Every structure is written in structure tokens, then in C-alpha cells.
Image 1 (cartoon, rainbow, N blue to C red):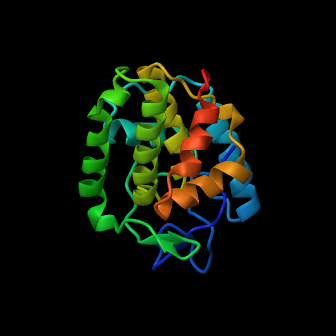
Image 2: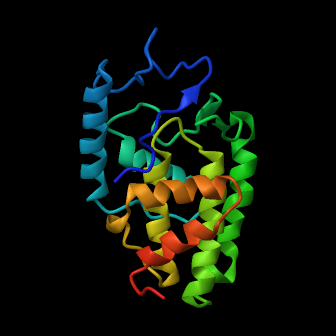
Length: 199
């Protein structure tokens, strides 16, 4: 399941083929539907492989994006260089991504992420972290899938693994949108439901 199916709006976008909204890709597919199918297939295959190990920092997160999208985009694992938005909501400007990401990833030093808290505290901290990470939207495409893959590792390390196979777009995407607007309650509920232990 992808949580980034809605199209981005980008400005002066060098990531797309000329006079097109189709992202330049390693297979040189110029049809949007074909690219979507190719991307889903290749990222699914990569998702069945072990995710990269790391220090749960920004470099680790970028390595996960590269792992998932390495067969599709030449810029896999690299921060975007253009301004993007979705539904009229602008994400972090590219020139601020590194600084904002550094601050967000320091959140993972909290006790809730170190296996030192209960499930309720972990879910609250995870929702806060995920909302902040989503607001940055580091990559030109594939943010949602990378976020879920990284959160899977975060939950596993903390002792509260998520079952992201149970993600439902109709409930999870609105929860992510609400978190972007400052309301974490739906995202907390969605993440709690995906924790294998439940409340």
C-alpha cells in the first residue's frame, strides 16, 4: 500500500521529462501509468529484501529510500532540490531540509524510542516523529513508503513492531493530512491499531 499516491505539485521541475509531469526514470518510461506500475513492482520486490541497517539517523533514512527506489530513479536516496506541495500544502523548502531533518531525527533519542516506555507513550512519540518527518518530505517521490519502512524499523527496535501490511489508505492518509495540520489524534489511533500488541 502506498501513502503517496496523490500527485505532487512542483515548481520548475527538472525531475520530469520536458513538457510532462512524468518523472524521469531509469527505465525511461514516458507513460505515467506504466511508470506507476513499474515503480510499484520494483519497490515491492525491494521491500521483500532486508532493509538497510544504520544508526536511525537521516543517513539511515536516505539509505532506505535508496534501497526501495534504486531500480526506478537515479536520484534515489537523495534529497529533492525543488519545492513541492500536495493539495495546496507546501512541504519544507529544499534549502532547509538538512537542518530540519537533523532536528527531527534527534527526536529518536527520546526514551520512548529506546524500549524504555509503554506502548501508549511509544505511539504518541511515533506519531509526533512521523508527522514532523512527513512535513519535511525529503524526497521528490516515495516519501510515504520510505516513512513506513523506516517506522517499521523504529517500532521493531523499541519492542513495539508495526504491522504495516494492515495500512488502509482511506484511514491512514487522512490521519497523515490531519497531522500536517497539527492534529495528531487520528495518527495516534492509526499507529496504535497497527502495533501488533495493540492497546
